[in-house]
Amino acid sequence: MSSLKRVVLDVLKPHLPNALDFAHAIADRNSGCRVTVSVTAVDEKTESTVVVVEGENIPYEDISETITGLGASVHSIDEVEVSGTAT
Image (cartoon, rainbow, N blue to C red):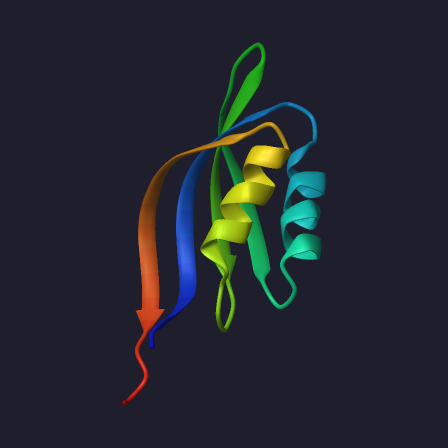
């Protein structure tokens, strides 16, 4: 079975939590994941961000649920890295 090693997401989030707290929340709820958040645009109520999650076996559904739980939404999956295993 293959495993997700890296995913790059286009995420629209409210100003709060800020990017630091947003990244911490994702990483804290998904053990073993490294999270990078880059703010690409800011408007009156929201921030457009690029969220990069890296790890050995990223639980995408958990990541997505965490993002939604923080009041944000995934607009697109822009890049993925998947590693296959021999059967």
